[in-house]
Image 1: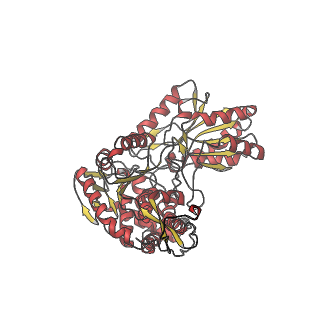
Image 2: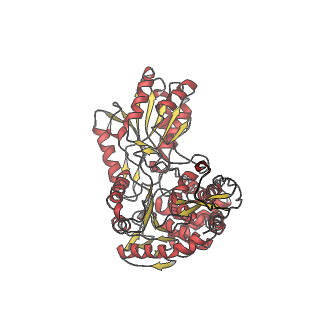
Image 3: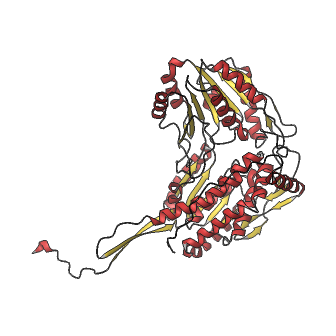
Length: 541
């Protein structure tokens, strides 16, 4: 294994394409979308570079067009999990021995392929099966994943450059070995970039990976594998499988060679995974690395000096972009009574101007939630809010799943800061607002901090510097990503490393060296050039 150091180009964030009417990128994406919807695709698992079609053949349906089948994928089972682990373990030797710069070149090439010939294809897949509008797909599937590939190479180089001091007559060095076993990457539906980053960040550091994406994200995951293959990733380094989560858990977490998990998903699932790993800890060669980002009940705390236009825009975008299905989406807001009447009028007008519908219509700001389970859960909370005496529907509140899983962006006004939708994660286009008196500022900061078990993102909006400082200090543990005068979403690789603590995960900051270093196991090597030949020290006389 080589830790050869070379200077990578300084990574810069991929420019976001606008897709304005008449632009070439808009025309290209619309054509790829049309062709993709028309083609009935057959999506296999990929184990050791080979297409595998085992198990039940399941339909793929767009959330915004639930009666339309656009393809199938193969679910597989425990035997496929075992096969993927076996292949990953066999691939480890050659992948570990490959010089670091050769591994890096693969992912830098993947970034360029995604920035070029694969951009429209991956964006279209994300739009179709995850129901994202073109802008949300562009900033996720294209730009953020490109940034992950490029910045992870840069961060890995910085890690390898960190070497210990050496005294005269010796040479000390650190060898950054990959983990001894395989890494299991378990990825969510909501961000294609996360799905691509979780397996690739571990692979960049020399690990081999078994990757299970969400069933709702299989189409774009398959395109990511096409990009890896086109970039020259050796067979078996990343293996893409679709079995149930339970089948994967049963095999991976009882396997002697389980080396670690890279996870994004729900808090309850992550806690169950942690418990299962703990109960099997005696089986493993090494203590596994557990890296996870989970849920959030993300807040916007507004001061009496805040600019109403800034607040309304932060809430409209932060709560409702991608139908509120971002881990970082604004879910609860605390508004001072002095600006609430004006803010209410402006926010209602903004939300009523949203268009909702299919992703092929680029004038739609809102699309569908991911599936029927999510739709039914959100609808039940909205129905309860309509009946509860402690709440009021300010705007929205309607929903319909006859064609797709469409839920109107909904704002609930809560009379009690402990109302259920102020506390529980909903993961959809529902924002709950609590109005407080400006003289209760400090007391409300305490409520913000104590309301939720999560600590992912949060925002403070104020024009008073003292209040910003006060909120920053009081809410120090309430959010891993904290925003001042902005919405709590939109972390950019290389600018705002992402992750939260408390019930929101291990805070290992995806898109930074903090995350990559979890996927190596350093070995300290000391070489002495003129070793002693007598045990006696001078003090012995």
